[in-house]
Every structure is written in structure tokens, then in C-alpha cells.
Length: 82
Figure 1 (cartoon, rainbow, N blue to C red):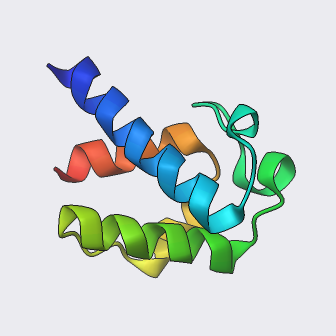
Figure 2 (cartoon, rainbow, N blue to C red):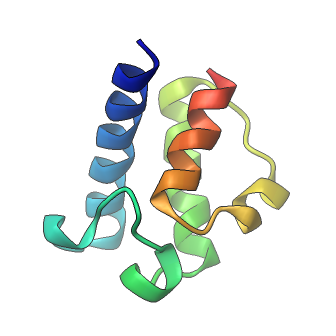
Figure 3 (cartoon, rainbow, N blue to C red):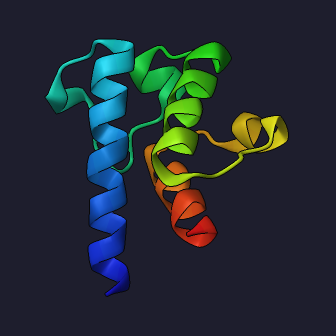
């Protein structure tokens, strides 16, 4: 069950990244780094997290946003909060 949850969360995050950052699908994988790989800044990450907050009904602290550097970290964080 947990693996299915991770995959579902990953798909949601990937879709939000593609829409928010306007990057091609091949640029986003579980190990993608926001800064170096996607040229995303902290405001981009906050925008993605705000959409995830709305989608999952969560509140994500700003300090947490600063610590999330990869797609995997974002998936794991959301999974832990659900």
C-alpha cells in the first residue's frame, strides 16, 4: 500500500511541477533536484507546496519548504503527513 501511495503522490507532484515550472516531462524524475536540475528558486518551491497544501489539505511550514531540495524529499514529506 505504501508504495502505491508514494507513486500516486509522485504523479501529483510531477504534474504540479510540469505546470508550475513549465518544464518538459523528461526533466522530472524522483531524484530531480529543484535548483540544479529545474532551475527552480524558493518561490517556485513555495508555489508547488501551496498547491500540494490545497490538494491534500495540509499546512506546510516555510522552514520545511527551505529544506526540500529534491522531488523524493517532497514525496516523502507529503506521504509522512497523510
